[in-house]
Each structure stands twice: as structure tokens, then as C-alpha cells.
Image (cartoon, rainbow, N blue to C red; front, top):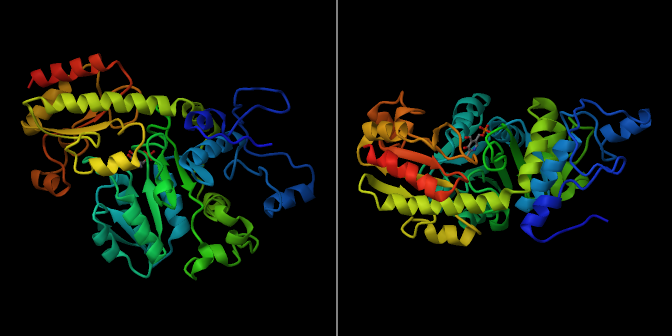
Length: 427
Ligand SMILES: Cc1ncc(COP(=O)(O)O)c(C=O)c1O
């Protein structure tokens, strides 16, 4: 009998894998195999025709990858998940699944730059239309939705302002207009926030970040909330009508509430590739066991850092959803449990020069263009990732010259604060 557990940490440790029934191996094996030996031609046929569950080829599914998919789906409160080679691949596959030429997507202005460039530079070349709006403002979102809109994309917490999405209002618009609400939950992880609980239909992650937690892999995942009634309208024929690209299967019938994940795997992954490797899935499955402990410590350290920065004269402003003066603090308290995440943004009064000095005088923090690592990291966009932009362009992108983004790690908080104190004193 399949065991079901209530507690987040218990699920994180027990979902997805128990032991190998053949050898008794308790640790999750890394199934480094491309193919799977079929018992007979008939056996192969029933697998390919989706009459029987099992593995055919590791681009479509692999037992080690499946262990990670099962645990992350359970932790997010979804019904199924499909792991991908990166966060970008997760969005790319999802958009290819949902959109065709002439379809429309509404996306938040403050989402990760890579999500915007994927939509505006690449998907637009294939005829997908895009409206970039402020998803903090539900009215703006509602006005942007058209008959051809397929999804609204936002992030649970955006970058660099650390704005918190108004999940319930966006979900109400999505339900009303028969479009999907897609939430990138990378910054929070399911340990702190479960967007499906608040009405999201699909959750996407860059697993590269907190899910991994150690900055040692690139990966992504799409989680199906299982809460769309595909047959309620005639807007989703790809799920409700026979699919000529897959033996005439009607995905909503055959897979019920797992139709989105099933089609993503059977058709989009089959056609685009971009699957997760078993080794990465193995590391991710192990990291899930410590996710809630890590997110709690990231959050405690980040709150202490945010409060410390607020006391410093060199600092113009600090943004952290856990601070009472953050404009979305009330929303964050409602939607997040157990902490407000590990990301802190702040602005140095001294602009570019102060930012450079600050970064160069950090010693515990590393200058790295990543986040969600166990080790603390800092980035000063104006002198690094965005240094090619002019002052006007920086302003247009909403990046102040003194803006610093910190990814607070799991070190002892006294060491973190001492490092920040030294670097601020250098300015
Ligand atoms: C919020 C967010 N979503 C998606 C991505 C893309 O993920 P990946 O780098 O794993 O492709 C990133 C990367 O930084 C991100 O920060």
C-alpha cells in the first residue's frame, strides 16, 4: 500500500523513493540508462500506447528522475511533475505545450530576465504574442487578458524588489477568463510557499537554486496542479480531442487531472528533449530531505541581515518581505509559512562606486551570478550583470545604481553580519 504522510519534512524524506524491491538497496540508485529492456513486442507496444505505465526511453522518463518528480509534486501539492534540464527548459517546454502561433501570454514585468527574453525574443519568433504588465496590479492583468490568452505568468517573489504576487486575485482572473495561472516559485520553494494552494494551476522552478541548495547543478521542473477542468470550455482541444501526434489519445480522458503533465512528457519532452539527467535528479532528491530546514535557516539569517542593513547610514533602502515596512508584508504573512526566504535587496546611497567598493570588500560573501546556494553570495547589477547598460537604460530596467542583491546562506549569522559590516565600513 502506498504510504501518505501529512508533514512537509516527512513527505520530503519519504516521497518518491523507499527502497529497491530486488536488492533491498535503501539509497536511491542512479539509473544511468538510456533504454529499458522490454519483455516482448507486445509489452513494448502497451508501454508506447500508454496502456501500461513504465519506462521506454530516458528522454521521456527515468526511475531516478521520477523519484525527484514524485517528491517535488507532492511537496508543491500538485498531481504530477516533469523535470527538465534547466529552469529555462521548464518554461520553454511549458510554453511550447500551451501556445501556438497567434496565442497570447500575459507576463509580469518583474519576472526573471531570462523568462522575458524567452517570450519576447524566441517565442515571439514563432508567432506567440506577449503583454508585459505589472502582475502586482490585478486590474492591469485583467485588462491585458484577451480571448487568445493561454496563461498569466508571475513569480511568487520577484526580483530585485522582492514583490509578492497577489495569488488569489490573479487566480480569480485566470479562472474567470479560462486561462492558466503559472507561478515561478524558485525564490520561495514549497517549504515556504505553495502557490497551488492559493489557486495557481502550474508551478515552475529553476531547481538550480534552493531545491538543489548547493549551487552544484542546473535543473528545472514543471508541476501540474491538476486543478483545470479542460472540458469546461472548448479552449483546450489539445487536451480534450484525440491527439494525432500520440496515437489519438485524448489526454484529459486518459490521464484525468494529470493531463497537462502527461502531455508535456509524452509530446513536448519527446519532441524538444531537454530532460533532466539521472545524476542531477539524484542530487535533487537528496536535497529535498533538508529543504525545510535549509529554508528556515536561510529565512532567519536573511531577516537578521535585513534588520541590520536598515540600521546603516550607507543604505538608502532595504527590501525584504519579512520587514514590516515592506509594501507586501501582509500578503507575505498570509501566503508564506515558516519564513520569508533568503533573498535581500538593498540600495547603497553612494551609487556605482559604493557598490563596487562594497562588493570588493566582502570576504565571506562571494560575487556569483546565482542564488539559493548554502553559501552567501552578492551581486551588484550595475557593475556586473547589467554593466553594459547606460544610466538611462538602467533606470528603464528598474535597476538603481546602488542596488545590491544578497542571497543569504546557511553560515552562522554573526559571521554574515560581520562581513557586511566590514564591507559597509569600507565605503
Ligand atoms: C526566478 C528564476 N526563474 C527561472 C530561472 C532560470 O533557471 P535556470 O538558470 O535553471 O535555467 C532563474 C535563473 O536565475 C530564476 O532566477
